[in-house]
Amino acid sequence: MENKIKIEIKNLNFSYDEEKYVLKNINLKIYENETVCIIGENGSGKTTLLLCIAGLLKYEGEVKIDGEIFNENLRKKMGFLFENPDDALFMPRVFDDIAFGPKNFGFEEERIKEIVKESLEKVGLPGFEERVPHHLSFGEKKRIALASIISYSPEILLLDEPTLALSPVSKENFLKLIKSIRATKIIATHDLEVAVETGDRVVLLNKGTIKKVWNKSEVKSIKYLKNFLLKEPGER
Amino acid sequence: MKHHFIDDFAYKKGFLQRVDTGLKVILLILLLLCVLVIPEKVLFYIPFIILTFLFLIFSKIPFIYFLKRILIIFPFLLVLFSLSIFKENGLRIFLFSFLKSLISISFVFLFVMTTKMTALSEFIKKLPAGFLISDIFSFLYRYFFLLQDEFEKMKRAMISKGKNPKLKDYALLSGNLFIRSYERSERVLKAMISRGWKIK
Ligand SMILES: Nc1ncnc2c1ncn2[C@@H]1O[C@H](COP(=O)(O)OP(=O)(O)O)[C@@H](O)[C@H]1O
Ligand SMILES: [Mg+2]
Image (cartoon, rainbow over all chains, first blue to last red; front, side, top):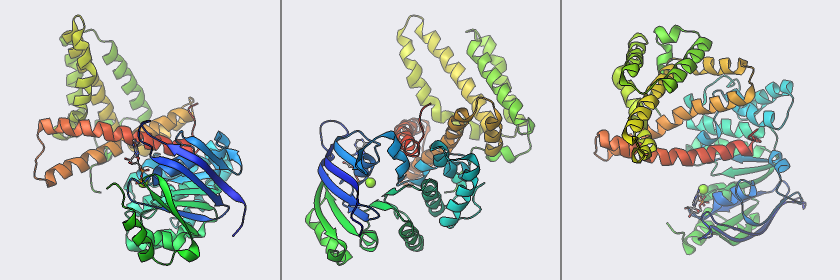
């Protein structure tokens, strides 16, 4: 594994309502091109942690990307795959959704057409440019949502429950697809199979604190991880 | 998920469907401006109500279908304008604001229902005001569908639990819808910002 630190989280605390902290004293270093899986029960704070890293929430503490604290220029380096693809597909045509990022990040107009085509090919849906998002299946929407972030080649992918609600076959294909993309990846999931299969490291989050971090060699099996979840039950 | 799309009726052959998109947009804006400025006398509103019905009939949109769509927003309007009741002459202000909004929304719905989504966004793109308007517009357009989806899901959940929604249940559902759509709009905005969108 490369040893350059890509993301450094220091003393991160976050609360939605200034009463109850949803994330408590999070410290974590993530290396370049590493895949880190965050597992934990519903409500343990996985999504919130991703949103903080992406600079989409205001937090206490520090998150550094390539040594820089958050600023607008860092957005281009990060791609956020939302749990529900409908939240990410807000344009009338698939083309516009995939072109949305590149346009905002100032890619050349002529390049954008090619980029959209390439992105669709990468996610296995060539020729979908003119399709209308609300006519697509859930699995297709998920792929288009992924295409809409890889279109601007982010160095960091933040993936929130990427396999949730996918059929077993779609799930396997989607995981393959994610693995094939070269980037630093943080995957929030409560699907332990995903963690075992993709994680170079696995982080266990419980009620907003990091309870454990395993290296790949330590994560033996789904059953092994499950035992830890049972020992640290969530709120629900 | 199987449901009606808002532009389902755009594919029927009716009066509004035949009108050129550009013309329709301008017509809509004019109509809305008219409704906005008409004086507060019931008599003045009758032609607009008749016009709505004429549009419905000649554009082949079933009245009941249309009514259901409109009912979704009824409670919002009630809440929104109910505050005015406490002012001097409040009831009057309330009734007319309500009527104005209802007619405006009917027109917007009618025009949106009878226009193919792609045609509309193509048209907007051609406008000199440029990209931002088309962004917001596209966004609004898609938002209609999501709201509708959400509403249908909740309705189905209610039915599956053995309750056939009555008018007052629709009020409950739309209150719920409001909260959900607010939360959704927050998430959508995050998705836009994360892909470099800025309020220009
Ligand atoms: N927008 C919000 N406003 C208030 N509380 C929230 C919001 N989103 C999540 N929470 C709360 O924060 C906690 C963590 O939620 P979340 O990060 O979504 O967990 P996870 O993704 O692990 O299921 C939960 O207790 C949840 O209820
Ligand atoms: Mg979550």
